[in-house]
Amino acid sequence: MRTFLTLVAGGPGRVATSAAALVIIAFVASGHGMDLLVATWFAGLASAGFVFLFAVLAMAGASLGIDGDSRGPAPKEADHG
Figure 1 (spheres, rainbow, N blue to C red):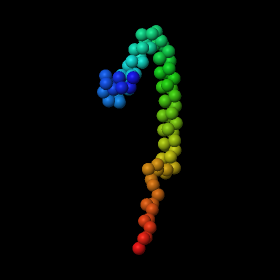
Figure 2: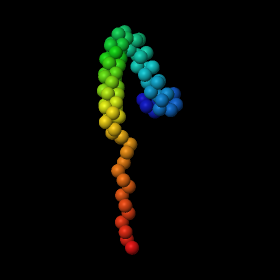
Figure 3: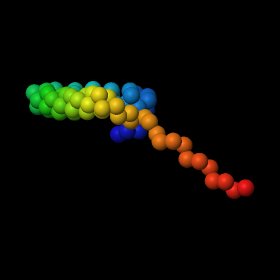
Figure 4: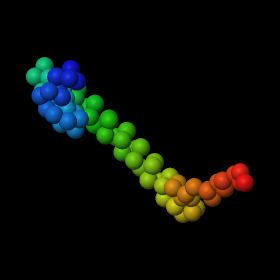
């Protein structure tokens, strides 16, 4: 299926869009559009919760001065002389 979508749609972003469109069309055509809407609602709630938790942790880390990109001092090279 992935090869077929790549052939039809192109790159990975387009493949994901095409796959989502095919799923939506299949759900609506089979009469399960409301089920898809409910699943999308709960997935949206779960993602919103994750984003909120991540934002709270990021703000807490910033207020405590925690820098995720900082690395310790560079290790000194061994003296082979």
